[in-house]
Length: 335
Image (tube, rainbow, N blue to C red; front, side, top):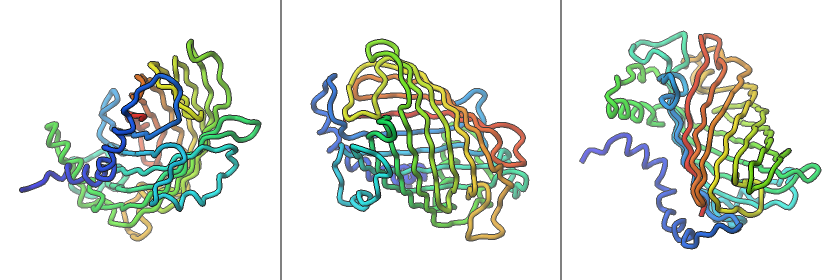
């Protein structure tokens, strides 16, 4: 029996998470609206340039990411190595460990030609599996702080199954396939170490009325996938906003809207500079600085949170003629 390439790709991304779902569901037997310690957290993120108006089909065109976090201070055996990483200035930390898997797809704007596109970013795919450590506590002056450390290992190139995934989806929706995948970046192992820190710097209001929050962040990524630094800030307002910074989580019904702006300095990006293992790999002249504007809205119903984000990026490479935009859909399940 022939198995669809898309189903093979989804199997690579989700087999670990799906095997753990019975455990997750057992943890959700009791539903309460009272504040409780944070248990399992399952996150599903789908990003696509079809989720914006006007829709496009270029550059960062598709991403699917799955993550599963264990209950507070529970360290599964495969993740115990992360427990030895220093806490990096987090006081009175509560820790969550988890796993993640994902696939990102990149294409040039012209996907109708089968020739090499020399003035646009190359075709590329990135498939990975990673380990997560999140710490919630306080840092300077007792400010609530959330630190996210992630170590991803995977592959860039044909083995990332990006061609199979994209052309299967295009055939499903009746769109033309992309014809230039023969010129995608070659296979290369990928390593990405990411650390992002957020601070709940200021908030005004109460949980039972409107609350406004200011949340700045900094991030650093290292590896042959990307080496970059980021600084930014988010403003959000809503009713019963989930408290990602606290020791406990109140399962309530609520909503919030948010906007965020980030500035990113990029030293190396494999999907623009080309892979390190091939000197003649396709590449473009990247922009060293990129600004990202995000805005969205989220709805919360006890264990479930659904969020939509509009993402707009300034030019990522010199030959790029206009901005890029894509939409993100997030489903968060807390048990």
